[in-house]
Amino acid sequence: MKTSTKAHAPAPAAAQGPLDWRKLVGWLREDGVISADEAARTVARCASAHSAQHPLQRLAVVGVAREADGHVLDIEQLTQWLAKRSGIDYFRIDPLKVDVGKVADVMSAAYAERHKVLPVQVGVAEVVVATAEPFIQDWVPEVERQTRKSVRLVLASPQDVARYTAEFFALAKSVRAASKLGGQAGFGSFEQLVELGKANKQLDANDQHVVQVVDWLWQYAFDQRASDIHLEPRREQGVIRFRIDGVLHPVYQMPMGVMNAMIARIKLLGRMDVVEKRRPQDGRIKTVRPGVGAVRGDEVEMRLSTLPTAFGEKLVMRIFDPEATVKDLSALGFAPHDAQRWESLTSKPHGIVLVTGPTGSGKTTTLYATLKRLATEEVNVSTVEDPIEMIEPAFNQTQVQPHLDLDFAQGLRALMRQDPDIIMVGEVRDLPTAEMAVQAALTGHLVFTTLHTNDAPSAIMRLMELGIPPYLINATVLGVLAQRLVRTLCPVCRVREDDADTTASREALTELVKPWQVSGKYRPYRPVGCVDCRMTGYHGRMGLYELLVVTETFKSKVSREPVLEALRSQAVKDGMRPLRLAGAARVAEGLTTMDEVLACTPPVNG
Image 1: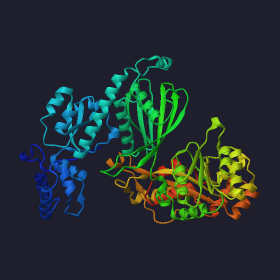
Image 2: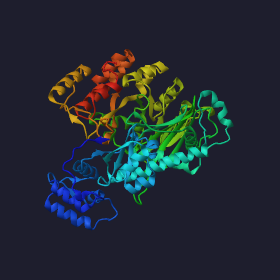
Image 3: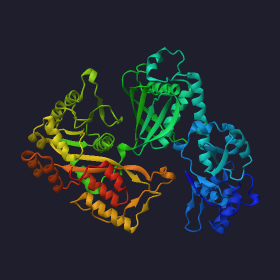
Image 4: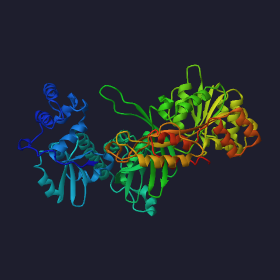
């Protein structure tokens, strides 16, 4: 991402050549960024700091306090200041927006490392090159001559330049080497699919270059906070995409031969049948993020799913947050009122608790976090899942296997003989599973399960549609939690709406949630976009929740008037906040936007 800057002052002639921390301290003082006392302290601290560091990194490590407010400048702020002083645009390297294959063709890795530069954009007539040494430009004519394109220089953080130079060129090298080994393992049309198995020159899944590319892919996904990794075959090139905060981002294109080898490598690690490419398969991998120093990184669970497509086998990896099961309810997005009611509901000794919402709405995270809180040494928590989402040592987890006649109903029936206290059933899909869940609740067990409905009251109607009579619903169902995930505004760049916009948006919000009112202060913000959020204006996601607690009055409605509108009306009287109203409250708090809430929540009246 680029931030345009203008020269603060012409760079003095003495500035030509490598940066020096003493000069940087002097310039900071000249520009009034730091006081004379802070400059003296910085000189003393820098003199004893690690000598191999880039001067900007050395200043960031020792800490330089801004005179205006005492704020300690980080590496990015120091880089922005230097860009302004030197008259060069500041650039924050976003690896998702760098075409690694193209930039690695501009120069060699050794050349980039020697001059502390990194190509970041390659156009038809121009190459944008990030540098950590703005006053060393003797390499520019040579690059322009080799590429036959003009060079536009931008200034980036020295640690980003060093890190991505190593990563980008290593990745490009591995992909090139793997592609040469694999030859033309891809195919140009669907008709050639039958010929693929006859190719003699296949790339080994255990080849060193393939291993390096797969390792890079995972680390890259972890760094970018991706929730899913898509490896998608195309006619000529394979495409890698990451889902970040609910939105898919293209990451890399590579030869089909390399992608096929990557998929084979991942299937091998996931204990899947590498040879079988005609049927969908599921698998899982547990890996470890790189730690810091001697500290071991977090373990990360990944669920794998393959699907045969017209141009080859597609692989999707779902990455599970290792901290999901230890998050408290407020971290998940529960409002205090709903958190208290949810804790009370899930502390009951027996009954059925339903969680509903579309795929990817966070149901698994909510259930696992809740079960983790309940899974003490005195309690037996058992689950039946399809598939097992995350391995949790505190649970006894079973995966359904339809080819062995082990479905949800059969698994639940078997669990009943395992002396469980709390049971979690992945999903109620049919009447036999629903009947077994009811039977488990009637015999003194607390049962958690999920349904796919638009809101909480619809879950009651869904059970009736499956064939569960109202009297059994009243006897067993404790409550229903409906949920959605919305993107949250980036805390770095969000800005308050002005008074006119605030008045208009409040009127629109009031109209959307009628007949309810959004209580409390109204402090709406709007997205802007910055380098921290990749210019999207959003960073992270949070849950919106609609909690229906089954009361005696609600039970009477289920028995006498099982109509959706009547159930919804009674649930609201009993304290349920509709999803859209919950979202409106988050808009009022400045955590998300009305557009996000409208996109993911059903209307208040259905």
